[in-house]
Amino acid sequence: MKYCRRCLQPDTRPDIKFNEDGICNACLYEDFKKQIDWEKREKDLHAIAAWAKANAKTYDCVVGVSGGKDSTFQAIYAKEKLGLNPLLVNCAPDNITEVGRNNLENLVQWGFDMISLRPDPRIMKKLTRRAFYEFGNPIKPSEYPLYASAYIIADKFDIPLIIQGENAALTLGVVNGLGADGNALNVNEGNTLAGGNASDWLDDDIKPEDVFMYQFPDKNRLIQKNIKAIYLQYYVREWSNTHNTDFAVARGIGGRTQESLYDIGRYRRYSAVDSDMQIVNQMLKYYKFGFGFATDEACYDIREGRLTRDDAKWYVREYDGKCGQQYIEQFCRYIDISTQEFWRVTEKFINKKLFAKDETKWIPKFQVGEDFDESQ
Image (cartoon, rainbow, N blue to C red):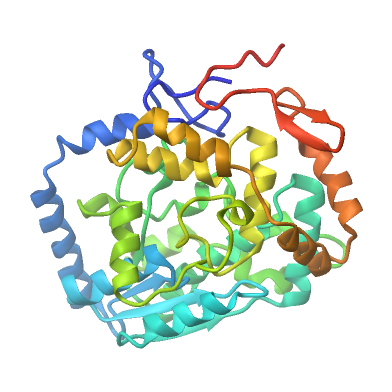
């Protein structure tokens, strides 16, 4: 396990790349941003917006939203800065949190139409359980309709433009099918989706008609219909984790202000607030790869100059991989298993090269920010 020499990104992240000096692609992109002609990109973005307005039959664009910090920024930027008439599309998670509901309502009140989609909860529950047992990733199936929904609606309503937020190939430094540009038609090629085919979830009990909302539309059809999809982050200089949070908080979104940071496994309170399952999933990710969401937050802060690498280590050591017992119990009730069964399954996915069991707990063998020989 090796860490980026500049931030705290480990090489255990799937598809991450480091250069010969041990610097991760995300940090290299942060350097590259200084060379970008942002004025030209802004002009390009306004040209795309003008094209969308000229080709729109109903709405100018679709913005997939959760009501959180990034989607709040996307929607309001599209409306106020680009002058577009967006249709918001929300794919609600099972057991959406109260703050998640409030954030969606807050966003709509800024002057939007919104379609809210909800996959069959019986199917989602079954797939969540299956994904936990097979992949140690219970949110994997929910990612399919979450991303596909905006593209399905654009296809069905003939809306010319889809506005996504972040291109993970740039901000996380991963090398996969996403591409390192502003084209978001390949959003379904990310790590979790890996093609976005609903057939991934078919079995004896689940038929194609049960998972229509899980299927990303045919890209060739979208291209033939002249539907475009972009990453707003690619075109907008001010896009960042902190900027989007400050922007959205100033416009009324709520965060996890009541929970202990030790229970939510992160040190910022305004991300992934619509579903508590995200907290459990980040703990599982931590046990599989040696990093959780606090690592991602720390890397953003290091790259943007808010924390030094040494100071960021404290936050990662303190909060990464933490998950309150109440969230584990809630997840177990949802998929109808005991907490004992939860830990039995979880132990199958724990990376034994990175963690050792100390009586009843799994503890890291590695030190945050220090390269670790997994053969030890």
